[in-house]
Image (tube, rainbow, N blue to C red; front, side):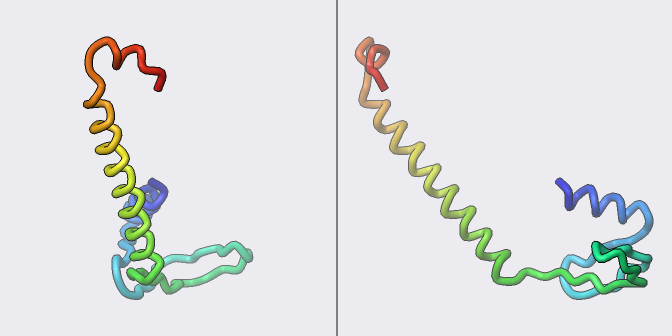
Length: 88
């Protein structure tokens, strides 16, 4: 959500950030060290941490899907009033 807000804010001033590669940001930026940076370079790309994050999301998603399938199969075996009064 933060990235979207930042992109919209910069877009309102006519600044389009690169989705890949390196580009100059046509502005004056005050850094966290309180120095002024004129037209700083902004780089974007998909490196190892990006793909590692997708792999991690895939593992978590797959485990949740498998857990849901096991839970549904386990609950399908219980029928009638015995399923209502099962302490689980």
